[in-house]
Length: 219
Image 1 (cartoon, helix red, strand yellow):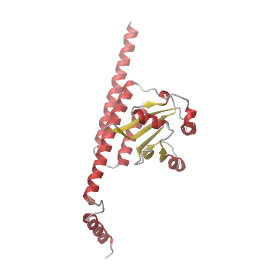
Image 2 (cartoon, one colour):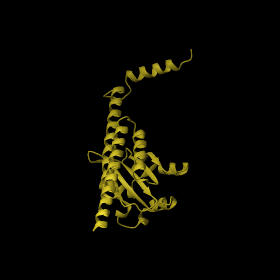
Image 3 (spheres, helix red, strand yellow):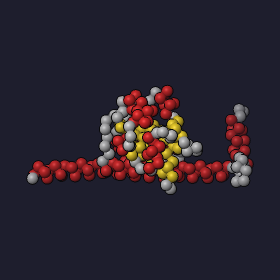
């Protein structure tokens, strides 16, 4: 009985430590995202926190393109050479595991997908090439509309505990809100610099360009 109680106490203490660490990382991410407004900055801060949380071998942070059929890479971590990075910079959603995760709108692991990975030959080749065994896909949503996805890949099987899954859900909501704010700021900046009817640059844009040209002109 004593050993059983000691085991339960140890498990409780470990869970408490993990919970406190997750809360600390969430607070850190939230405070960092409050200081940035560009998409690549949001991506880099998020990738950094995810590295601290789960130690993934590779993280790919994608935003869905305007055509809704392509993913654009805005941040990553892991060992990728220039050719690999160029190949992964733009990814089509069609016939991809990422597309399935986006359609569900839920965090998913590779082992949750039905069917054989042979159906997704590009992903299978990707895993083999980088000695990876599993992955986790985190959709980013604004008002129910998926705007991006964060892909985490691991060298060893990494079954997400409920606590870690809850943390990833919280990270998804925090990052999605930051992206929403970034888009809002972009819209405000566009409205301030363009005519509301023609959408052409207004006088403010011409004035700013004239001032920059004067400042760059040698004496």
